[in-house]
Image 1 (spheres, rainbow, N blue to C red):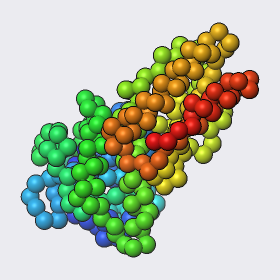
Image 2: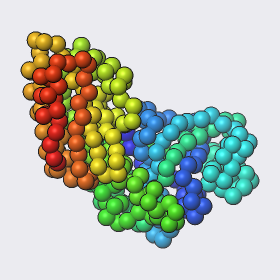
Image 3: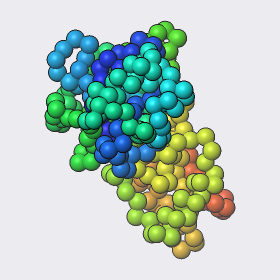
Image 4: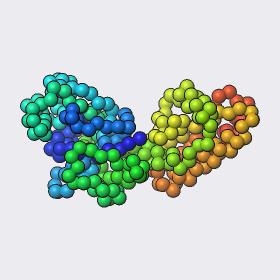
Amino acid sequence: MSSIAYTADENMLEYHRLCGHRDVIFWRLSAQKGFRNFRKGDLLFFFAKPKTGKKKGFVGYAHYDSTKRLSLNQMWERYGETNGYHSKEQLAEAIRKVSRTGEIPARMNCLYLTNIVFFLSPVYPEDAGIQVSQQLESFMYLDREDPAVTVRILRKAEENGIDLWSSAQSEETEALFRRDEIMHGMAEIVPLIASSRSEREEAAAVRLMKEKVQDAEPVRGSRTDYIRFNGTDITVLLPFVSGVKDRRRLLTELAGKISLYRYYIRALNVPVSSVSFEVLTEETDPETEGLLRDIAHGEL
């Protein structure tokens, strides 16, 4: 899981905001440093000056989907104004301005971003307890040293308010923002409740969840835990794989893990209305199934 601060042109961002674009293309010159450990669904925060103000801050974010190698013509033919400009000529001029040679490269790295959320007012780095240079030229990772940075940015953005471009999009945008808050809050919990499963047990648990989970998303940072959303009500799906000899040890660990999830969801103020747990198993005996139901059931 990664979040990135990405220096973006404020005029381009304003164009996207006014047009109500949800999915966009950001181009990068081929010579620029590439991303590492940045995966689909990770957050890219726009680091730019607000419409009024001289200081850069985080003015919104989008979800990274993929990187494509495209020429200028391909960028415009495939994505048009979602490149952030009204015409191909304006796009070409913007590229020339940042190119050291003043020429347009044959191919550029194009970031395909989805589900943009803009903030009503910027979140400045110091608001989230971090330092980002006002002269940042490209991008920087935000949460390598402190995984809670993303949550703090989102919390401050919620405090300031998010930009609901139109009434038609307001509910969708709010739901998306809340979902991101929950996902990153849950990711903050994962390293606090690390499992003591053996490599064999972990591999079996990963395999079980891949086979049985269909309508849920993985908790970021975990290979085995998943979340099913119903608004701000969530169900956490956990695996239980064991043999006869280690059954009681793993039952005890599972009970402890669920208790810790409940505790940290409260302690870290993860914005869920309620949480329930569902335990997925291989074939088990009636006694174990009853124990698992008792362990999983409970109120937040």
